[in-house]
Length: 614
Image (cartoon, rainbow, N blue to C red):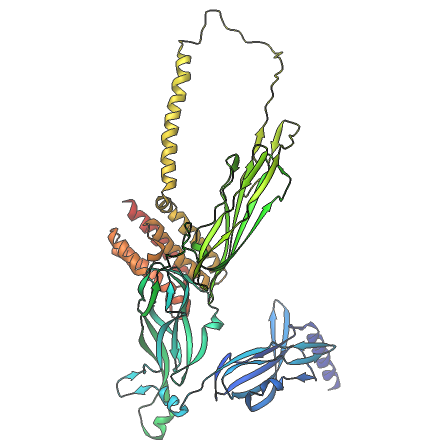
């Protein structure tokens, strides 16, 4: 018996020696939004460590009633991957609390001493909203009304609406539209929906993290769970009374239905059913004011928001001929900067100019479109002298002061000196962006005498009047005419933005689908569906020259019908967009696999290409 015990202890020691513990952490968790009088759990979990000195932030709980706790519990788990055994353990301290009043409250970090180190948990911010006026009525309101043949869900327990950050704004002034579901019944997902397309507005979707989509709100004395279906930045393109159109969503609710036997046993046995309810998203009316005409600058190009501008020049002094002069203009702020016209730096005529390089870092959030745009101008002075680079202006309408403002770049006075030449009589200038290096070829006024053998011709053999003489004129003339018409046609095509987009539509769509495929390979399904939607709508928009404001499903379907595309192709277009939109919010309910959606998108693009060519 002693030998067996010794063997078991030895094996236990050997096994435990190969165990690898996970990372040590201290994590605090709780609902971020609760109602007054609502019970909720607050937990502090110490992972992969033991401590005899844990200090919980009791002083931060003075605005809450402690119903229970702290209750301590421990757990362990083991996992083996490729022969490597990982052991994880956790110690959890749980409180059951109810908030006493409305407001935003911070629960500070808990501390635990592990060895000679002190580990702190994260702090929490809990928003407490108004509780229900009548808890009993609220409980009854969330029940499902059951009759002998049908089960219905009250409109007071499940509804949807679009909320806007403002209902009165100026033309080109951004605002936020949030489509949100309110529910007091178990919401499983969404079966089908048609969200507002926002015709007449520039729309920029806001990426809302899944953890931030769900919250709680008090509406008319009742506490509702909420879920954000869509949130975007909208920029109105015209003034007047506008309306965000209606939409439809089919919600799937899971309810428990009592058995129909009656009596004691009939009340004991219940079943779970899924019910569908069609929800109508109400329209929202807004008033878009025309921008004031009084004080409008002559160079105003539609920028609306709040902006600042910084300018720099490189080099700051010591200018030489054939060296690059770089001026960077950076505009920061909030508004429709992404769609505004850039300030233009006008260099002297003796400078060689290059197309500006534009870098935009603008992000859509619940605060609107914020970020920066950097315009980089490059020019080269070919001759020495004193030059003046005049100031450039950027005018915008400031939504805070409700007035026009103008930002200006400095005026630069520079003295360009003659640059040094290299040994081979060539001066090389620096490169800009992806441009190749440029060489300035110097001239020599003295040529060496030719010391090689001379080629002679017979005395009466003249080039004038010969076939070679005429070919020397005819061939270049023919080549010039061909080049002229070719370059003219090429310039016309390049100037036609719609035609260039149409030609590149297929290539651009396949490129976006390749990006979508990379997201699919990484199992990033949300990004996959988003990129597939952009590929399909972008392809149709470029192919048929559809303005950005009209790139929505309904408008595109009408245009495809007008272009004479097959009904089967149009249905495939609508189905792919609906499936991708639906899969973003309820992927489990989508029948097609992501791979099938990807293949259907490629097939759709090829079908449209073939039908357009006919």
